[in-house]
Length: 144
Image (cartoon, rainbow, N blue to C red; front, side, top):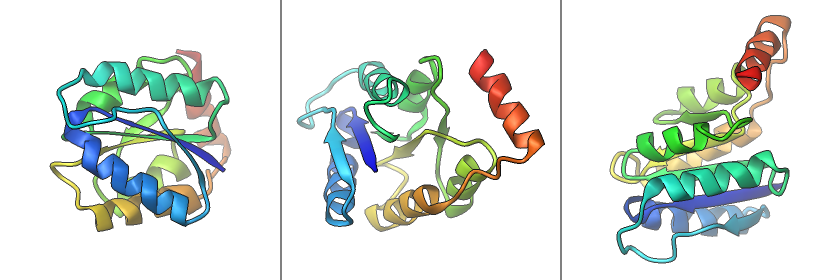
């Protein structure tokens, strides 16, 4: 599975920690930046990662900023992106199981690396329920 990662300066360290972890776990990881802790605009990186996933260049995407909120909003501006802000294992499970999220957003200021690893593992290992009501709702999202 190929996973794209992107962050702004506020998520740079957490992104790098997740990049290394996912690579060690055997995933193919594409780091779309940023390359330092210097101030950058999160919408650029949220959009870049979402476009990478929606175009099929990666199977999933993870975006990181200070809280996950801004970069997640940016990712969701890309048609076909379903990015969920994840702040717990429960969020990670339902993001995939009910919403078939193809990206998740995390916050470096709100999430320790060990917790982020758990959330990412939960999201990646959870299957989409695919039942009629969830599939119908995901289609409604995709048709927006």
